[in-house]
Structures are given as structure tokens and as C-alpha cells.
Image (cartoon, rainbow, N blue to C red):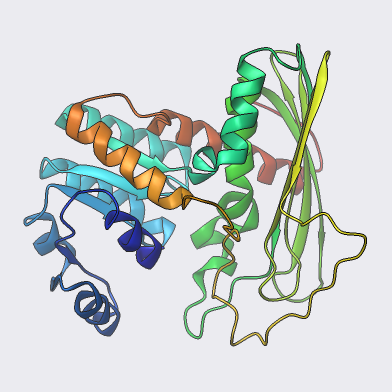
Length: 315
């Protein structure tokens, strides 16, 4: 995600000045590629920038956001916001107290298909919202060393790391969540899994959210259909064709973590970064708040609780 964000910053009008990583070779390579400074540590970077963009493993988010806020620096942070609701609340409060802006990258809100659906729902084009079906499936993330994604104590697992996008989007469309219920299919060995979560909203709307690390290396697919009293909206990342085939690359050729295939006139990550930067620069409100990211985490953790207990969880 650091690479993705670095490319996005280049479209923003901001000056990309430096980077740092626990892997010194990684930060040095990025610095050479973008002609920026490779700082020796995070504190050194924070002291030399106006905005910090955090693209590190989730357990590091809290301490890095708090350090940036203490230094009076605005913060952009990749999702999920944190590992616990308590940590997320502490991060939001620290930024508020410090008077710095805090943006969390819930990038699905910046995909044109999802934004158009939101616009149509808001305009009442499909009447009263009834049922949402959202799907996001990929392959198990792989890294040559320290694959923290598959360690649920560090990433939150697939539910928190991947499905959180659709929990946020569903709440964006249908409002606050009342309760959740979830089931999981998982291999006896390894991290491959598929989860189905049913969400009931206070408005009375329902959502079925499906997510999986279960596909061949290189595959990333998303779908949505949203129905109301007066209409239906559908979209799928699959190309409409009588038959589709896929011959996956070798595991070593696939990216370590699945990302949506763009095929779009504008990169949503660039749109996201530009929006955050302009809001910070002008003082305008963010389209997605840190509190939105906190609530998406709350839903994801409730889904995980339901998977463990086998029972519905009320928020």
C-alpha cells in the first residue's frame, strides 16, 4: 500500500518528500525510485513533513497516529483504523485534541461504480432501501517473510482486513447497524476461508456481505446489488460474457495482496489521496470521517464475535 499511495500522491499537487520503513532496504529503494529522502526512523520523518501517510501493519497504526498528532502533523492512515474500538477512539480523540486532521483510507467510497450507486440511492431512485448484497473475494495474501496478514492477532483476519470495506459501504448506504450474524467456511489447514455476514440496519434494511480469501492467486472480484421498493441496481467486476476462463499466474507472480483490478478512467486511490489532501489544505470536511472508519471496525469485530459464538451480535 505504500507503493500505491506514493503513486497516488504524485497526482495530488503535494510534494512527496520522504519515506521510512522497518525494512531499510525497502525504504531506500522507494526513496531512489521517487527521488525522495529515506528517513532513518519514523520520528525523523514526522519532524520533516506536514502530513504523515501511514501504510504499515495494523497493530502499528495507533502508536504512529498518536506520535504524529503529538507532533502537530495531519494524518492519513490505511484501513482498518485499528485493532480495537478502544484504540480507534483514542486515535480520533488524540487528533481532535491536537487540532490535526485524521483521514482513514476507506477507498471503496472512491470507486466510481460505488459512488454512483450511493448517489442513486440518496436521490431515491430505487425507493426505500430494502436489501443489499455485497461481495469481495480474493486469494490468501502471501509474503516471503512475516506474513502478518494471516495472523488474526495482527491483522484481524480476512473479516477485518478485507470485508471491512463492504461493511463501511453498507453503512454508508443504509445507516446504523442493529445486529449481525455470520458463518464461515474454512480449510482445516491454512488461512483460506469464506465468510457470509447478514446485517440488519436500524432502518429495517438488510445486507448480505460475502468475503473470501479463497480464490486462485491473482483473482480479485467484487459485486453488488442493491434493491429497494422501486428498483434494483446491479454491478459486477466480471466482464459480461457467455463463458469466462481464468488461468492464474504462479503464486510467485501474483501480487502479495489482492487489489481490485482497476480498468477505470481514474485510479480510486489517487482520487482518495487527492480528496484527503485538498480537504486538509482547504479545511473542507472529509467525505469519509475517522468516526466512519471506527464504526466499520465495530461492525467487523461484531462479525468476528458472531463467527466465534455462533450467535447474532447486537451493536
